[in-house]
Image 1 (cartoon, helix red, strand yellow):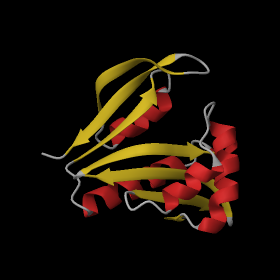
Image 2 (tube, one colour):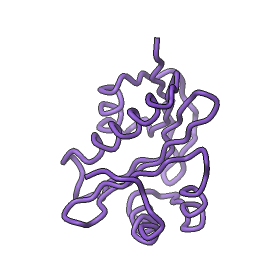
Image 3 (cartoon, rainbow, N blue to C red):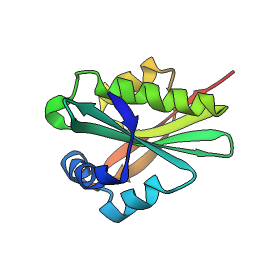
Image 4 (cartoon, rainbow, N blue to C red):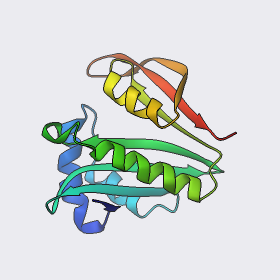
Length: 144
């Protein structure tokens, strides 16, 4: 089940961040985000437990997928796809003309998922990621 993130989800999502990202967002950053007028956060639940979360920023008619994370032992079960559906639907429902994201060049599973939603690579940020050092592929989904 995908639903909007609530304040009481913050501690769990902050823990999930630590498990999924080498450079994780802090509790305070997550807390500020759920109160931002530009950001929307969703969580993926399975049997009452949060197994993933995502963040979409909408600004000036464009969306940016800022985060999408699924617990390592819950990947490849559809939660990422459902969160992508929620974010794309939310953005399109608010008349976003384009959505962007960045992804580690080596993350082929994520890149395939994004491509299945109409995202295409348009640029590379050299050495963008740390731990380990890696390029970021910038992908866009543009409405015609």
